[in-house]
Image 1 (spheres, rainbow, N blue to C red):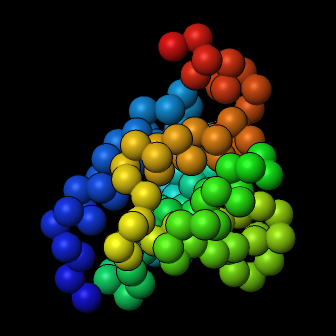
Image 2: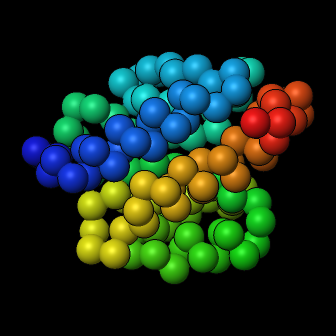
Length: 126
């Protein structure tokens, strides 16, 4: 499945933002791209084999942010149980999908929830 150039560009902007967060590191378990803060995953950036539509999965504990995210086209609680803990899967392709800036904000919310407190404080200092 070929990813449209505008969607790939959006994904790259989000990934660049993710990797600019204090202490963020990219890993590739089981063919999926994830970013960790310390030893904990704070964002799933998807697989790059074209087997799934591009998207990101983040943890949103704030009820308002969570509800707002779920109101976007195609967004749903993450499967296999994490959805019950506030994780949402956000596709990048559908009409009306969030722009890169909003996605970066969602990633930061997830980062602040998952990252060690000193890393979140470092983000605030910038």
